Length: 223
Image 1 (spheres, rainbow, N blue to C red):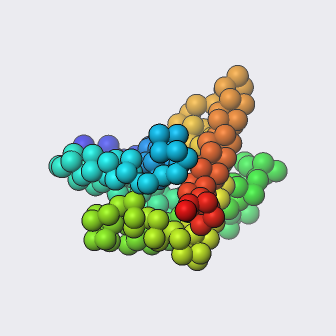
Image 2: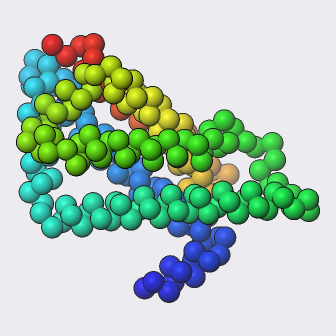
Image 3: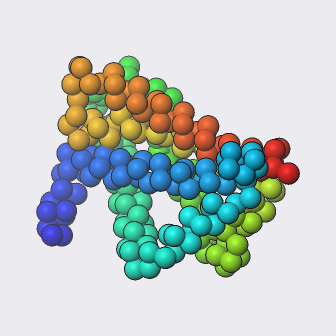
């Protein structure tokens, strides 16, 4: 099982394929995470004001999965580690290749701000992930009262600002990463490329706006 993975990591194509696959799986996680976040915002069932009970029930459900939750978290951690490791490896290899004058840049003229800043936005997301885990996953107060802890944490303007900023960074990262992931997996066709491009931009906008809405709601509209 480990040998095929090692062989894949040894080749440039293999690294890109695994990078793309882990990226898409992380996008799937972001969708699930966003669904959970939205339980902290207003719903018609509570008259336009969220009391956090839906989110607390969601957290209780996840905790009730027991060993499956632990396995899911370990799998998610593995996805992050592999994705970050490959991002660093590929970036260093590309930088080394550019030192040789005979190397021709295949993406010449095709760069966008999002594609040019993938490593930077990825590093910012990774840095915020550490804070996010400390604020919630490894915070005993969160497990005692999940919704109340989120509301209290994001009612601090600095925390809210950082959360809003990283939401925009996630949007920028996904705007290029989604399409790039399919390209790495060999899914490139003139008929489907515009659809994938549009889907990536739509997801990026959704993540940026929806994730940023939570701290905005808590700061300015809750209570």
